[in-house]
Length: 453
Ligand code: ADP
Ligand code: ASP
Ligand code: MG
Image 1 (cartoon, rainbow, N blue to C red):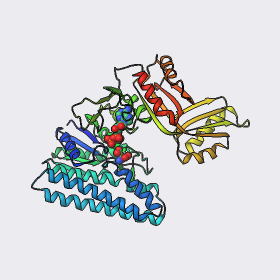
Image 2 (cartoon, helix red, strand yellow; image 1 turned 45 degrees about the vertical axis):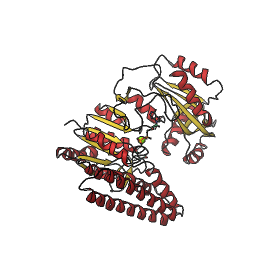
Image 3 (cartoon, protein in one colour; image 1 turned 90 degrees about the vertical axis):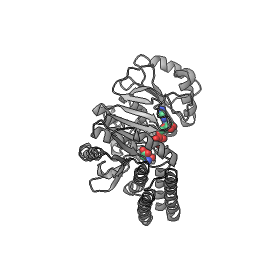
Image 4 (cartoon, rainbow, N blue to C red; image 1 turned 90 degrees about the horizontal axis):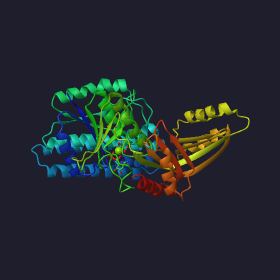
């Protein structure tokens, strides 16, 4: 059985017309397994409601819950009235029953959060997963109105994780065990539709896989069932040479290697969750990034090794960064200094995007979050600390081995007036990282893109 795992992104799943388009795409496959995100903005709204409840604004939180309910009711209503079917009355009832139950659960979680006066990571996950719980159920029901044999499958039955709320780690063994049931569903002629982004910890609590986690859900399932392809259907025609929202002349890449696509996601190209390629790479399953609205466009194919090797493949950038420099106290021995720095990072569970070292100092670039205050305090034990915020990271992905000299000269050519804080090149990873002031980042990205592509 050649199974295709298809993931449909939330940015696109905003209205009933797109739902129909999505179902039409699904109908073209013989054995599709479908993973869907929450509808546009829903996850963000859910998190906002959770925070409001925690901050004594339960009333406002419940207004958001009601808006989420209304919006989904409207989509179902529009879908069913535009796609008449004898069973529509039953479908509508089943949709409303499920939606009302989910919103009831959401309201209970908000009540609890308001009583606790804090939004725990566990509660944040339980609340934010509701978007996918709703969208997957409703889309599966709407499929029935098009005479499709779509069947909602609860993600918690398949995506088993640890209990690292907010960024849960999948249990590959258990996911493989439970994914077998999907093949049975397919053999019986049904198309499983599963909510992405969330799963379940061993104690049965809801966990999430982090932002953009639905991509990861799709590839975890694809890997587990040895899918023929994993397809990420979104609102752009593939992975572009730069973020098309900021760089309008960016072009989709026909082909990319798993490694380069991972680097790209990791360094800020929002189009994929950074862990998406891991399960695919392990099983050598091609990943496609395709456009829901232009299904005939080829999109981007991500495979083990790509023949296409220009000087540089693409650029990506990340805002909201900070640099932290730790300069060793004289009493700290040189050779133990780096160990100490990285031990502190490990203790705070913080990932670093770029590092530069001198004999007795380290400058790290990482996301600017509240955690940096505690981190700076911990570093004071080993050295003088200086923190600079409002930084941006500009990354050139897939730099060919011979190109750094050529690339750097081109970059310095166009960034003649930009102050560059750090620059580092990795031959192994084929990336070139530049740390810049945040307010110059977008302009710098646009100028570099223009020069290089
Ligand atoms: P979805 O809801 O389908 O998961 P996302 O918003 O997560 O969609 O990802 C698609 C968006 O990613 C695109 O609309 C685009 O604006 C943005 N994006 C950022 N960088 C890139 C890039 N290099 N190539 C393609 N899209 C990118
Ligand atoms: N809805 C989730 C998010 O916004 C997951 C996803 O869309 O991939 O992160
Ligand atoms: Mg996404």
